[in-house]
Length: 139
Image (tube, rainbow, N blue to C red):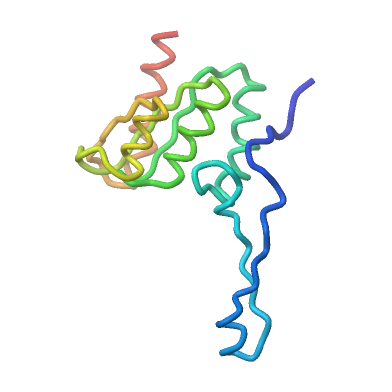
């Protein structure tokens, strides 16, 4: 049976009252702590990936491809969640290659294949199709 969603995070995440801001504004102000979902400070991006990666698995995929900027949170979280599920992640990043630090270092630690394209955002879809065609050719 196909799964519509794969649980990746720890939910519900807490709601914390912002005491000083509440006092300053004379209103009760809360913040939803989705950064505490249990996956690399992931928040709402992890919730989205629960559906997208379930769909990939249901389709029999062993590799997922995504894009973003060189320090993309989405790309890093895709790599983290894919690794957890035994999928390969290919990150087709917009921008020039740079030192592996921040999210780029995490991408590497999660075992993602990182490709620096140097193409602008309006050309990234074609670049991703080219990468997908190459992966299909590899089986």
